[in-house]
Length: 531
Image 1 (cartoon, helix red, strand yellow):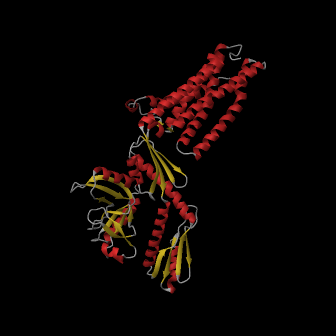
Image 2 (cartoon, rainbow, N blue to C red):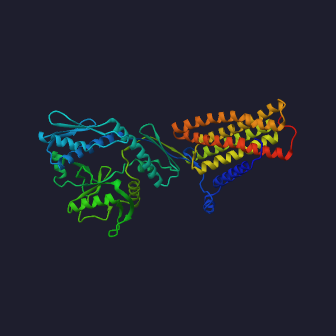
Image 3 (cartoon, rainbow, N blue to C red):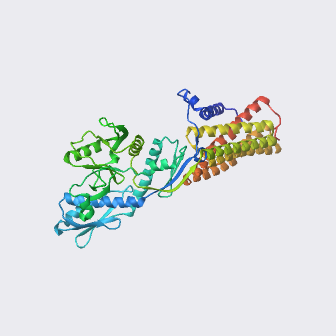
């Protein structure tokens, strides 16, 4: 193992070049980094919330509201399907996690049952989401399976994470940490964002946009007096023209069909508006709805409130439009951000909120620097006293390369360094030196046993490797468990520790072996300096 192979020189040189290239941006000012050549890496180490300061939110996805909406949509699907087939029915109502309906004509029960089975869809696991049964007294019952509801809730959490990420990215917050906690909770850490209220305003708004026809068959007063037509609902308004509107429950077009939304100014009036554009499906459906309802008003609804209710003067087939209202540039831009990012599948409840000040983060950075320096100097002194300037110095060189590679790997992968991550970095330095101690002590034992110097040095590496690998595999396994089952700072610690395991084994074995091999080939010693 003491042979000076060419591949060892190449690997060590390449690793040092990699370390220098990717770690260099961390010590350069921003203006200098921007002037670097295009082939040079420019990414720097990301500081976590505890080191940089920022906002912390613990959010809970309201899965009960999601379940309620799913049942409401089922009621509307049943009503629309039976009406389209001209099947008379009564007593359509919610029943648990589903609905029941009574068919008026006994001769049409079979037809109604067949139509209801067409509402069944398959879940991700390949099972039917809806159970349809024929009951006594001409009733048909529909009920969602618990598997379907659970899968939808889990999917809603995953979808919410992605939407939150897009919304926070639109704010310009650097490298937000958005992770799932438990079954229905989401942790949002936004380093550098000092205003948690702004963060909550953007994240917490559902931003569910729908286009629904206004029901002109009754007035709001008549609907409030108990004459609300089936399939319609009363929604409050913020358009400044009416306090509420009666609208059809069924959404003709939804915000999921939007491809873009921007804050602009109306070309004629100059007022601030939000312009939007649909995808091909949305444009087609929007064109069909507007062409069939010329002269009728339709409502633009955001999170259960009518924000605009314009009258359709002509068919809108271009797939684009405007949302008007009493918007400022900031409020219109915020609405556009929400619409671009997409609607949350369910409301979010803020369970916990914390703000970490920049001063506290700066103190943590200084404390991390100090602890790292103290740990490095302590290790340096110990190795020098225990193994002398030569072997101790080689260990320190390996330690420096190890630290360089850790910083470079974290910069290249855009990992976030947290205060526990700093602890992982210090622990990694100690583990790296531990491998050198095992190798050196094994060399001493071999020399004391009377073996020649070359054989003793070679055995020091080969026989210590089993212990080094075993110890580092155990550490790596613990780090992987913390990474996959932990959250927040725990994952930061685990990631730093995992990188450190690979770099420490590389520097303690390959780099140390190469340097000792060069020394042995150059000096041709007769005795082991640490014997």
